[in-house]
Length: 628
Ligand SMILES: Cc1ncc(C[n+]2csc(CCOP(=O)(O)OP(=O)(O)O)c2C)c(N)n1
Ligand SMILES: CC(=O)[C@@H](O)[C@H](O)COP(=O)(O)O
Ligand SMILES: [Mg+2]
Image (tube, rainbow, N blue to C red; front, side):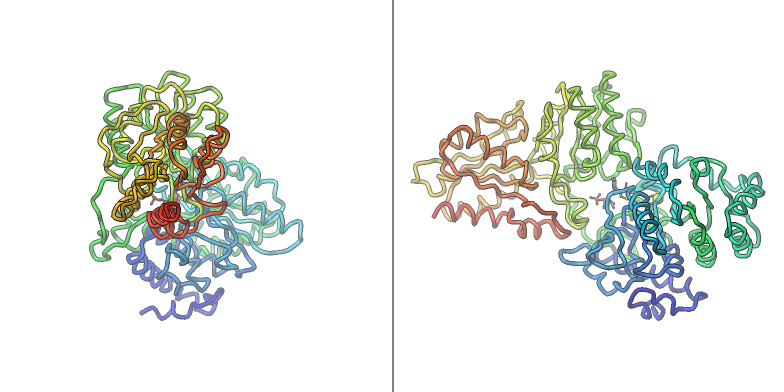
């Protein structure tokens, strides 16, 4: 069945396959991807869309000498297959398994690690500039999607790339989709490029403009003519890219392998950067994904025949709680606006978009802009709520600090996917937010530990006159065990009392657990109570300001304070508690269970917690150790 794919076991093996068989190879790869991702989960639709493009690139490049920088990197599965990694797909996105993104440590053929959007042109330009300085001749290609092109960094790089006096290909993979439908002016511009009626207007310009390119321009014209009978779908845009000084070609058919090979070969000979716009269909080759590419952008394991996910828990996620609560609040308060950076589904804001479309804003993959846009709305009397994944907010550090915090603006920042996210790995773990936000004056941070607390936190934020961040985890929301939630500014709560007298085993220990770690700690406490060990248990609720009164009282009454947080230790809540207790001269020792100075790899969250040392079992063991 997969006779051609069997011949691909190491980089460049594709060159041993007859070019006329490439479409058949593409079919086999699609079949492999559908089968494999249906078992492991992964980014299916983007990968199905780029199979032909990747084959064409591998046909003209030599690995590992030549370099492709895959933007976001969620579409690089075919590249992995063609560089000898197909047998590792069983472990895709699992602990110690094949990464879902390019990783330099995984293969010499992965030239640059990606995961966050819009970095490819900058990185490729760096490589091309180095090659120019080194006088080496490796070929350098950036592949960037139309969604990723909405990111500011990509536009900054395009502004800079015209200075390059060397070849570099920038392939824009235009499938009209980000995760959801692509939005914005750049997307409209690409749509304009698609419009075939422009061809006639530009046909003569194409030839003139290509011919002007020294040495190779005329052969590019010939090649294009040869491969396409006529020049129908090809033109040099007289618009943005050309005006910025970059030769651009397209759109060409991103599923026509021979045509792409011919055009890439010629384009690689040109002594300057060149943009090639390639049209593809997201989800190509699997009907459910073609019909609903957003649903199959990132999927859990699914049944191939029905397209339905094989494991569903049907439980409410924190994201659901947030999105439902926000819609309810916004219906009663017309000052509330919702902002997403290209993640209406992931952040749950598609519900808001549906119900209150005029007050919903998808700004594209533009986290920096999203925050300052919200700041502008806030100075104008609105109550903007920006929801972005924790790791993507890293992009907007200075916008939060410079545009929101200094002016004390009432912007609500929702940090979705805070903590470990699992299979996306290092680039996506939301483990830095507490550290970087805590360092910002005027910032308030709430880490709700369950459903009601999240709702309360949102109501609190609605009437709070300053910057406020609410962080919650990916996945199922915890229905709190303690009923009486009365959220007050800067106040935490005692979930279980302990005692210092030692009559009660474990009474010399207090656990302070942050956000999602409250649920984890309850599991540890269940185990401890079975052994008649009863530590005190505190939920700080507010990361900033810290409830110093509560922490002082707890520290004065317990010899050992354990702080558990699913975040980086440096600059985290535990360190703040430690410093406060030390500076207060209280005689209690503080042990912080958090993430050491490292990045956290991909894997199942429960396994990762255990590996890091913040699982319920680790908490149980720590208390037992201190109780003995
Ligand atoms: C900074 C950042 N923000 C958001 C995301 C989430 N994200 C991953 S892929 C994607 C859409 C990318 O669209 P496009 O580049 O067109 O690629 P396609 O999925 O269409 O192949 C988004 C928003 C991200 N990875 N990085
Ligand atoms: C590639 C990327 O950045 C997104 O597709 C991300 O994987 C989405 O993560 P969630 O599954 O948590 O929405
Ligand atoms: Mg796209």
